[in-house]
Amino acid sequence: MKLVRRRTDTATGVASTETVYAITSLGHRYADAVLLAIWLRGRWQIENTLHWVRDVTFGEDHSSVRTGRGPQIMAALRNTAINVSRLAGHSNIAAAQRLYSWTPGAAINAVTVA
Image 1 (spheres, rainbow, N blue to C red):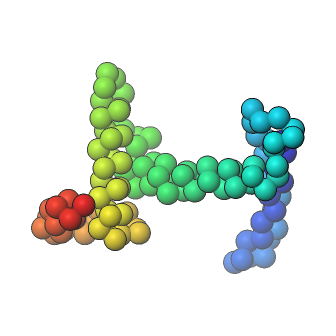
Image 2 (cartoon, rainbow, N blue to C red):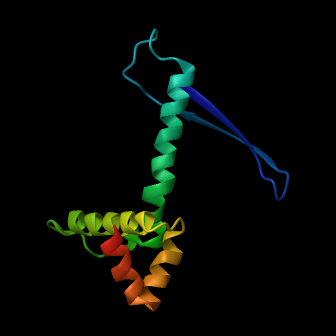
């Protein structure tokens, strides 16, 4: 499928267009445009809520852990930290991590509540 995204930067008023392509195993009778749009938005929601936080807040792409089970273990620990922060009511994970580093009691409290 072909998806054309049109955006306007609210700060500058500059409009841009981006064309992306996606492949699905659905047949043409089942590949409803609304359904595909919902799936694509769901994919970007995952990207924006988990992967971006892992990449930017935790610097996962810059990690030197690259062999054996290390990357899987570190990903599990990062996911756990993100989920504990969210369960404790934090929407800004970076701010939550700063809070936990300044007040370790808050981190212990978040883990025991989760």
